[in-house]
Image (cartoon, rainbow, N blue to C red; front, side, top):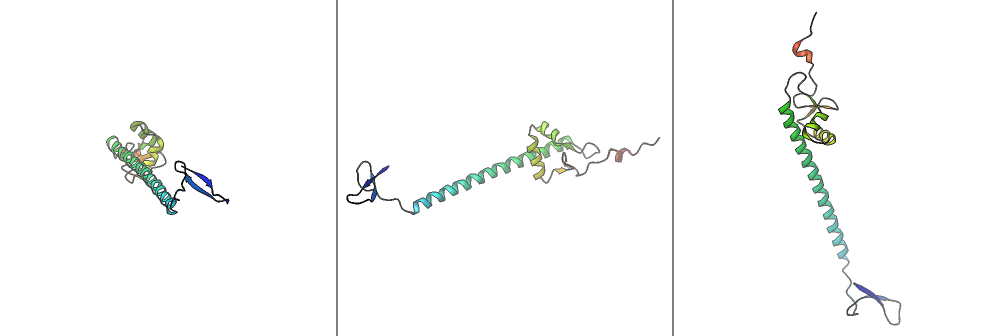
Length: 135
């Protein structure tokens, strides 16, 4: 740390060392640019690490949802879709994380805003398998 000392006979000040009272060398002009570049690179690396972490969390959530749907649903009428709320409760995830994972995973098919399946996009009618009951 330095102090400014006034030159004799003028109004010019020079940065001097506190211990030796001798003029100190000025830092090179490129030192500021070097520090700025290091700061920008560090900020970019932190941003990339955050994006990577978010991507991996979403990918893992989508994988968990797919595995759970494969284990708990079948390709039958009325049994092929689950709501996002059911998925969130079963896997102990927030509804926002389930919605994000369902939107980004191509293996998860959204029937509407709330229903998700791995079998088909549109839900099957129960009447397709048993037919219409006639009296």
